[in-house]
Amino acid sequence: MRVMAVANQKGGVGKTTTAINLGTALAAVGERVLLIDSDPQGNASTGLGVPAALRKRTLYDVLMENYPIAEAVIPTLVPGLSLVASDPDLAGVELELSQHPRRTFKLKDALDTVRAAGNCDYVLIDCPPSLNLLTLNAMAAADAVFVPLQCEFFALEGLTHLLRTIERVRVTLNPGLELQGVVLTMFDRRSGLSAHVAKDVRRHFGDMVYQTVIPRNVRVSEAPSFGKPALIYDLRCAGSQAYLQLAKEVIARERQARRTSVESV
Image (cartoon, rainbow, N blue to C red; front, side, top):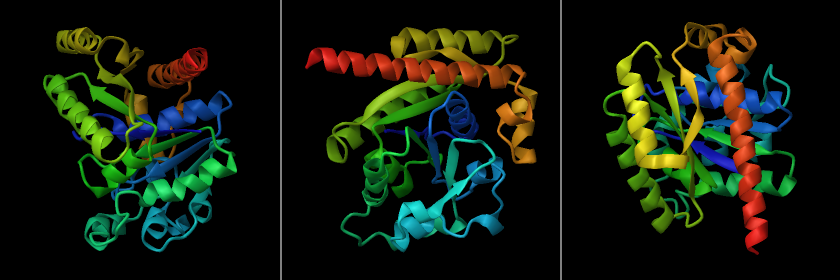
């Protein structure tokens, strides 16, 4: 099982859209995926068509009431993709857990049971757009951080800050944490700025940047308002096809990493 925190401290970069559609794309090619919505805004839950009335158990119950995470898993309309939904009460977790001795490892402890069960290939954790206790829990529980990066002027500065955060988490909480990769989002082929930013990011970070680029796409933007991933809303649109290609690239990288690990033993 591979646990990936989908994170960027900057908002509006396509993080939740990427979590939803990468999860859907991975499920579409046969992987078993669990998406954990750890953002109190709950956009991933809404974008997967799970209204508040159906969220009987949420991530809040798992973190604060010690419910087994299996009791909070909700099936979605995508075969192979399940959800642990968000709750607005998550906004208070930082204060409520302030005195708990394992406050930064609550999610890791919960996911240990999922690892033991062996019935999931990928766990994607949609993080809040800030460095708070929920994000730290996600990074402490994750094998790697997956970074959506908007093709805009301050992209490199934001990514540099995030890499420093990942390094601090590696030193203090999770020595095995890796950077899974960076995916360029909201790419506008008509814009010279998008091309310039993409070139700069690839020059600075090389192979860490996925070859697949997610274009700015109206159909992808519309899909959440219908409670559907873009791949269900319009499979043929450019954004959906890009997320399918991204899923294939993610899987290919994982297989290559496993082969390299075996060969080095």
